[in-house]
Image (cartoon, rainbow, N blue to C red; front, side):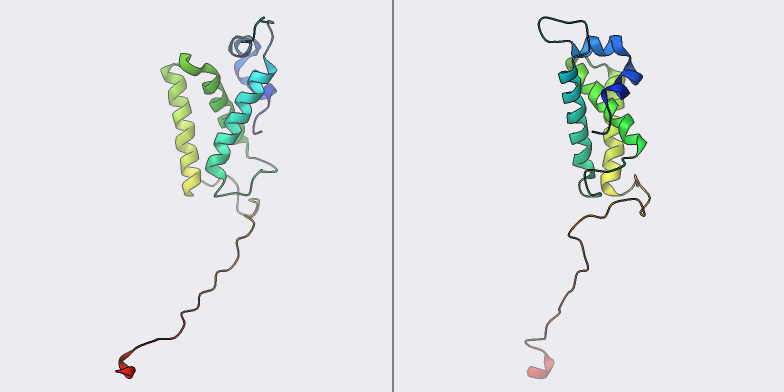
Length: 137
């Protein structure tokens, strides 16, 4: 995963995460670890959907910006139907950023650090010979 539960705590605080994740009956007054882990895993999968054509996954050392984006996506997903306009805009900005990464407009890692995709090598073409031409008429 690109972000950890501690990253979410650092960004949102424990009280807010308790509010968003303590949804099982009976409520415990603590962060719902399963709910939070699922939100982070879903956010990571969403990010990977944009990176899959650009980088070999999983990334051994993901750039720090992915931690930020993972937290934003997970937070938006935890909010669900209670997400406000600012939350929706933040989520859409992350998706726009990831779309640019997918198109190659933004490079996440310097080329020397980016893991090469497996199975890609030189492509060879053979034009073959003419079947018909002016000489044959």
